Image (cartoon, rainbow, N blue to C red; front, side, top):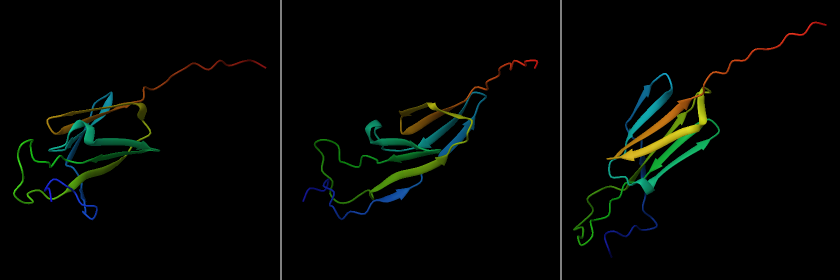
Length: 120
């Protein structure tokens, strides 16, 4: 059996990634630690007002190497965030660099307008 094969009965444990939240005048910024995760292994979803994050680290041995035994417990990162109404759902951006996911949640710009008043 190849040690990189993952059996169908493998249980995958979910862990919450450590996440910092920052606020600026224009956006909320989430920074989540996702060590060992490649860009293609990150899934961000938006369902109603909930931002979902799921990611799985690459635990495969480097090419040309073979594992002598299990060294890393299989797990995936998972976390959900309830979004405030002030967040622009179309203005969400995400970037993964060096195991840190940065999600920028732009705030909606306040609208103002003048309402015409008619005499009757």
